[in-house]
Length: 357
Image (tube, rainbow, N blue to C red; front, side, top):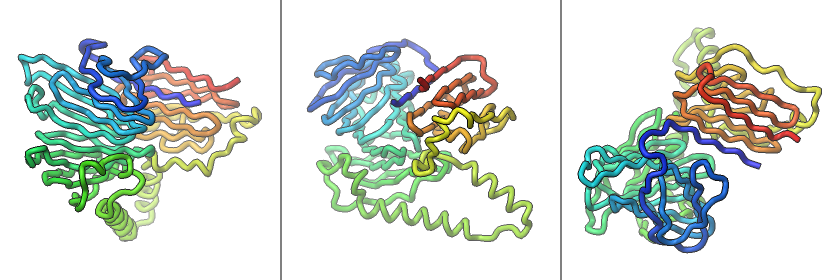
């Protein structure tokens, strides 16, 4: 059983019609905000703001009102996080999409009805800005994002800005690519993929990435390893503090399913006392758990872009994404564990998850 909550600050028209399904092959569905029953995908089905669009064993294309197109391959999932469109006020128009998983190809509109700086796409590990181009994004289940700049039909190529908390990479050549492995590291250095055709751009990039991308990831990992091997300080006190800070650098790639202790959820005698001290995760205050990874609660907490995430994968799964500027009171009851968490002091909203019998 999997619980996933996405809490965001919402403004403007809540359920505005932003476009429709223009192409469909196979199976997909649309989960509308504040509803439990997904809508079966069909041609011409309206897509609304805050819809979660999912493909199963099929493919889908969404055409937005400004004539931009998003094509989804199999096993993909996206959320329309913001769409503002007024045909007469291009400078005020906005398009924001959250690419959750799978492979998506974005084709900007020829009508230029949305200013390029107002088009923003996010993944679990990166934020993507667009300047008049087409591009492809593949997001793995762990959140690793591969971004490829694609030429238009006339051969023109625009620019893509790929940002993480660790830095920025600009893609301005055809079939130039970068990988954002985690949000706290910079994207890999741009590489140009040779021998790549548009027909080959699907989820196989996740299973069998091009050699150039694998080499770029290896180069980044080697650079990180060389940096860690460098002795910058002789003072052991400073080294201990640095090691402690490194321990807090937790992300989705840190989740270790092999270290799970399932007995903690079934033996009532081992109910743990939670932390009461207020701790910091970046500029976010957390109370009730050890930030990063709490071994007693087997709970991970980390920042992903504009969200703070809480992940616990034991017998059941909890995966929450909350806007990191919000104030929340969380209660998670799972087996013999009662986890109480305050985010930024709490008070604005309460989220209760009960996975116990």
